[in-house]
Image 1 (cartoon, rainbow, N blue to C red):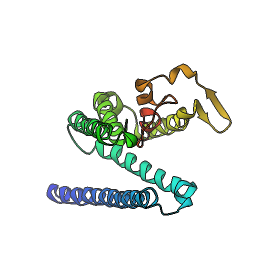
Image 2 (tube, helix red, strand yellow):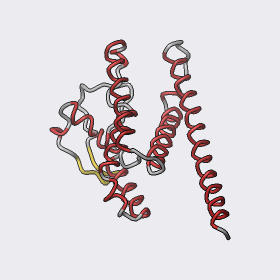
Image 3 (cartoon, rainbow, N blue to C red):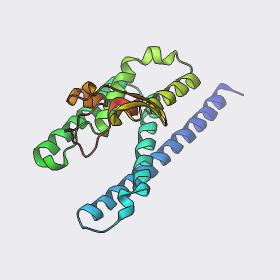
Length: 202
């Protein structure tokens, strides 16, 4: 096979992978818009929908979050200027926080999904060289274990099921600890994605 043909085949394969990612992102965005449309119907128009705040609604919301964060992390390696893009996304998250605090304090967004994605991009950019030394399979396994272990830090413990290590309440102190994942009882945000556990899903 000539070099030109090899390049063409590689381009087609890469284009196919990119198309699949675009399709998944598109489906997730549609799902997100439908979910928020239901939120408007329930909270603004008073339509009764018990399922929305029950298990079905929770699973729907979680599926959107998981796919969105996973795809965002997967696509980081396909692009360039990770630190710059991370700073831009983090700035967008800060702008959302400022606007909601000024104009909608009752629905304020503090440490929302954009802040998480920007933070994850910045950390990935800073740690890019050592992270590339980790074999993909090992990195996936380590991330999965750490995600499972930190999934319930907001509830006060590490672990899952009956395996629980309760954390000291002094960790849940202020906005800085809330940014990491240890939010105090008085903390409130309508969209909250801390570094733990979501960084390990990114």
